[in-house]
Length: 87
Image (tube, rainbow, N blue to C red):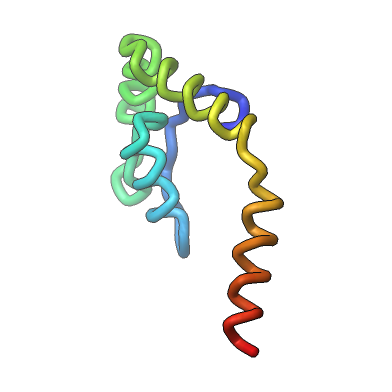
């Protein structure tokens, strides 16, 4: 997302299905389920990224959004707020 490039994602395990679902919902990615992944499906997913300009537009938009977001500062503030409520 940082580089503004659409992705083909094959979720593997643990938290990846959730991350992949978010990327798909944001219009950044085509998803190929690992359980049924084959070269033809991956090829179709890559082709879809090239054919549909909405993927590039969405990737660019979210890249710019991330560039103006202080992720570290936000995480720090949220953690600090959480720790204060735990006192």
